[in-house]
Length: 177
Picture 1 (cartoon, rainbow, N blue to C red):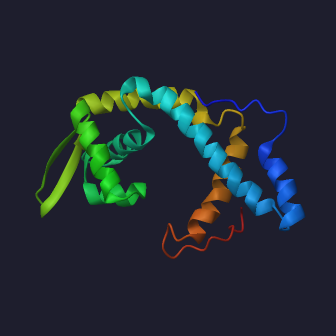
Picture 2: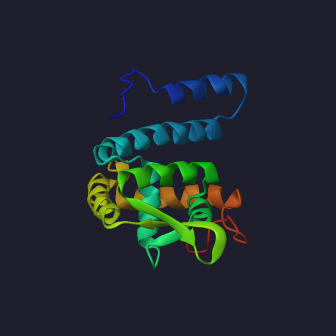
């Protein structure tokens, strides 16, 4: 469980006040710092749910991606690009998933040097259970109503698009958004 700070004040708001006195507008600093703190909170909540299943959130994401694939298997390089992680991280996650019996590894017939990761029945079963638990937790965002969760996604999406996560997409909000 995430360690509650239990402070008598909001440390990010306090830092924002000091920031404004010393450096100027603090809105961007407060927002960015809040994103990092929320990431810590969410990862702690996910870990609490996933740890009993022998999973981290990174490994869970790999399993979900494999369940989304038509054949239940994907090349490791595709997993890395879809999850936006370094190849070393993919290899590490796959090694752990293979050791747990959730994934198997096989040569890629379409690429003589490539490797495919395929989800096992045991992996599919753990995804079903873990997904149910994460969904019941509202993916750690239960404090926000659904409409605010959608707004949060749209706001953060603009930052991701501005960083080039999707080629050729304008990060500006759409006419209907």
